[in-house]
Amino acid sequence: MEHEATVEGVGVGVGDGGNSLPVVILEARERLVPIFVSGDQAQSMQLAMEGEPFERPLTHDLFVEMVAEFGAAIDRVRIDDLADGTFYAKIDMEQYHGGERKQAVFDARPSDGIALALRVDCPLIITDEVIDEAGKPPEAFEAKEELDDPGEEDDDPFGDPGDDPFR
Image 1 (cartoon, rainbow, N blue to C red):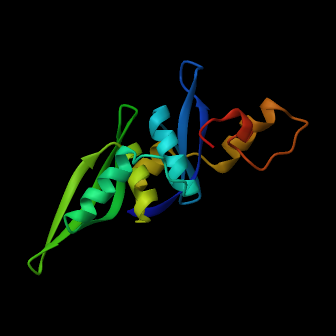
Image 2 (image 1 turned 60 degrees about the vertical axis):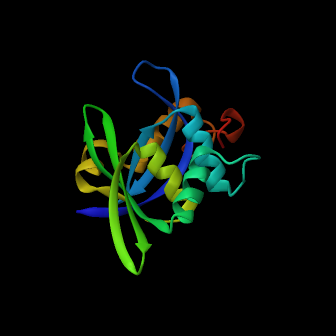
């Protein structure tokens, strides 16, 4: 089964080696799914979430413009597999040419798909299998927060915005 996901935030998480890495947090089925991304991808997502245009088109902005110029549209982005710790995604698109509708599906990195979905405001879909394997209850993030500073109340599980250059 598939579920529509929302991007809850982009921040810095701790990877397996204990190092800080950019992460995007998706919410679906009342579970949070963290996906580690590159710094460039995190910045691209954050700019799209804030609606702030970059001084020159970023790769995702350019792609959206090109797709539109060719009479096509991104219908949805699907995060549909997780194997050996790697997430997989697909971008569903359509193009109208000469009154005919042509559908296409493209393999993509989830980070690219999410950045595009944020720009075109299309559905971001995640499968039960991915949620079951990688999803965590919101309390799992709150417990980490309490360990960081038990005397401080903070409703933001992604930390202090001043600590994160992507916020």
